[in-house]
Length: 336
Ligand SMILES: C[S@@+](CC[C@H](N)C(=O)[O-])C[C@H]1O[C@@H](n2cnc3c(N)ncnc32)[C@H](O)[C@@H]1O
Ligand code: SF4
Ligand code: SF4
Image 1 (cartoon, protein in one colour):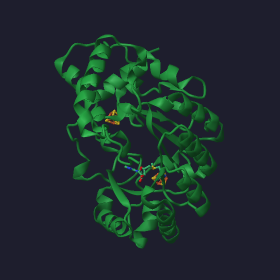
Image 2 (cartoon, protein in one colour):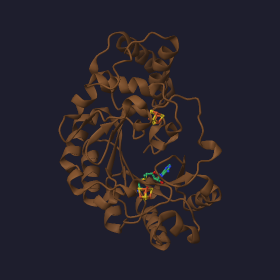
Image 3 (cartoon, protein in one colour):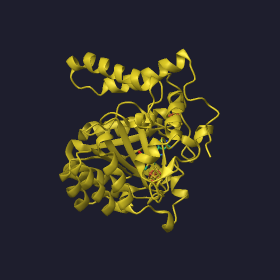
């Protein structure tokens, strides 16, 4: 059964055609490093776009080299109980946790299409061995990896092995105020996490990033976190507060930007193996159901379904605030 077939795939509309073209070409152009190559590559991409615009093939959406980000929410389980986030309230039961081999198969199948694999959660480092295994497999396939962590479980052994693989680590930090810490994180481990951040900086060097969430609750804190990052020469990324089931409040900067959402480049996997095109898919009425599950189906077959290309098409016109999350913007903010 399809949830979206009432919408015609090739509805003729000038705006739709413009969004289609712009949504594909703009992120492509931004990924070209050499200025001299921008014009010829954009011309070639335009020819390719025109061909696939009129002669649709199921493989179209991941046609092209290194155009996709594979994002794996490895678990919903968490060490912390942050007030900004509700993910920790719904940990997956043991029977719903995907065997790691299925994700490695998925990575293998998509290797040529990926510019990055990102691990998030819950807290990914609860599965530290699996994270290292994925990091090794990604390195073998020359796919850069980013792991987003709350920093609680970091240790020297993990950091040393991770550093050797040359991947990026993002640690979340929303305040420098020890008194607010327990209220923000649901645990009083300020000293441990700050110690882990300094250790990570020493071992990973410039492959460490820090990410803060900008909300009414952190208006003053984010500037202090940035000052701390500047002092230690760590890149600092800010993402606006969104509804992850937490109790914080967005700021005025969490509004719409008028730029098309780039999330359709993403291939997102839930802890049970369900595949979606963005973790906010439930906000789009026709894309609530997952596209498939890598526990039971091959990822390429899932992405080649008519429904997958239709969901990507719907996402091109989607303009919700979640498009501002780090993983949904056109250019990867953690670009290695
Ligand atoms: C959901 S967490 C998972 C990874 C890890 N547990 C952590 O906290 O870094 C991924 C990123 O989302 C951010 N985040 C959490 N709640 C958020 C919210 N309500 N709005 C925007 N970003 C949020 C976290 O700060 C983190 O950088
Ligand atoms: S933001 Fe990260 S650390 Fe905090 S509860 Fe959510 S998943 Fe856990
Ligand atoms: S705006 Fe949000 S819901 Fe819409 S496609 Fe982008 S990430 Fe998904």
